[in-house]
Image (cartoon, rainbow, N blue to C red; front, side, top):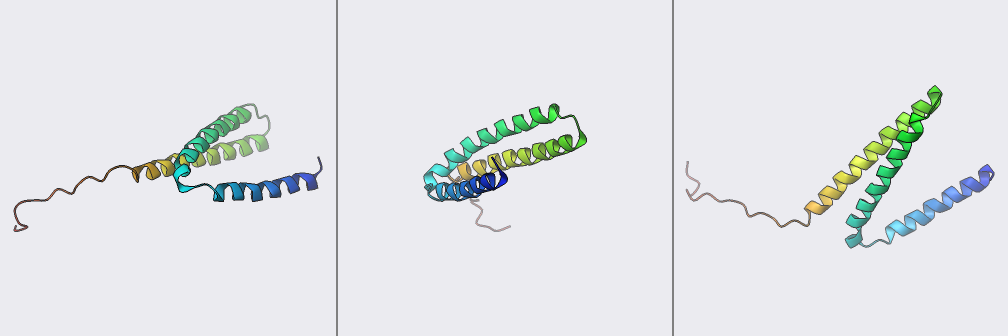
Length: 103
């Protein structure tokens, strides 16, 4: 494929991805984030594997950058998922003191 065809596919995939993600209901965001985290883990393992077989400094540098960005993406996804799941936990009642507030 030539560069114009690849660029066209890339731009069209951006539009399709935006439309698909924007139509997701709020109830499905947490399960989709968990699935996306699993995919990011696979991508991270792939980046580590490819970087391990790199032979020249440019490949190694790009691989390390890919590993770093993939790890940030993976950890960030789990942090966001954890915060979203915290919203569904019941609130704990605040403990009140019986001394009337006088010190």
